[in-house]
Length: 309
Image (cartoon, rainbow, N blue to C red):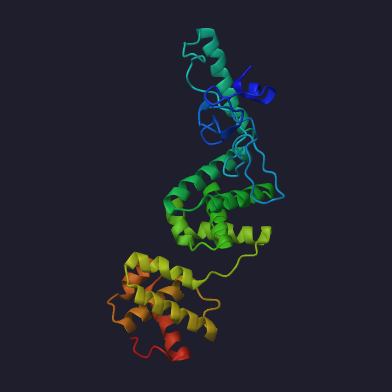
């Protein structure tokens, strides 16, 4: 019978002050006398359910890690260890080691029973690699995994590369969650051509019916500014330029990266900061011709940047 069971069944008395009032510390697991502070026992077991309460009406009782769409089996698989040892560290006999070797082989084969399962596993592995390279959050990868599963259910992966479809799902997830990641950046990390990702993304957009929000050029300003290293004054001026262009209605239908790059160059000219169009174009993944065309729109339709050459 444990100490906790004794406390529940009998009334304990402190040996130091002969009082019967005790308190329990949930953090350290100690049961102590409330009068003199004498510790009766320590490291008691918490038999309550593990809970994560997000609201007053939810009961999130759980036993173990939650499900994850980033894993092809959603985290419900079993893993057989590679060490041929028992629980106390003794080596297994030759016959038992052979049995566990066959179990490991069939356990690995059972996790990918079809070609769709194998492609799903490869796609989720690619998403995990790109996550560390681009610094994306788990929420973005979870959403991209959900999109890939839906595409696999509708047989959209057939006839296309796994990398291309996985990259397209990642781009759709970034657009859905408002992350400023371009097709060029994702294509460089996945090491495939940009047109392959664009083709797969158009198929996803058409078949799955995405409701993607329009990208905001202001979010691209901070990304480009951090690459070329401009001052905060210039960044604020570029944001003001984009806000003015949006109010004038000349941003709709334009590439947000080009709009942000043109606004940054115009702000650099106005504030006197020496940044060339080539440097800004390389940081934004655009061309100098596109930047000059957008600046021409700013000069003719806004009439605010007459000093920009």
